[in-house]
Image 1 (spheres, rainbow, N blue to C red):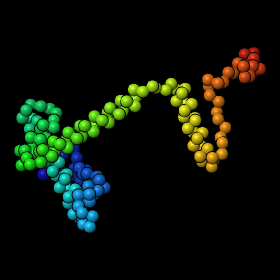
Image 2: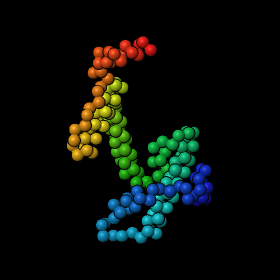
Image 3: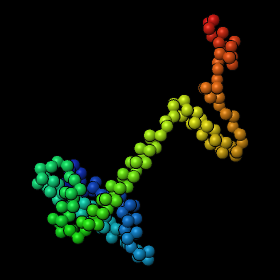
Image 4: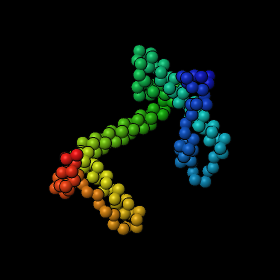
Length: 169
């Protein structure tokens, strides 16, 4: 594959995160097996090459169907065409698991966001309360004076002389 086959990127730019890939490699092997750094780099390059190959074939399958968006079916068909048919069932199961987990995450986020929303004043008061708790913890548990909340302040009754002076000037 030509280094510029990946649109707008050189071969060096197209890679996978080394730390993540190293973790995956180590998880797949028995604990007493070590992998040389060169071997890890080679495995990562193989993974990148495999992704490029499947992506390219998926694009061709998609184009043959006069589609502009590669769908999961195109990827599965590409695996079949490339001779990886024996993995299709496992890949499809992983895809279904991913869809399920994504749906669960979406439902959780909707539940969190659809609950009773705080007003801006309530959020500010809660933030001040949490700051006070954090300051108290930092001060070794010493009590910290609580700021007055806007709903408990009544400037016209707390400081009438101040209000009168400001009205006269």
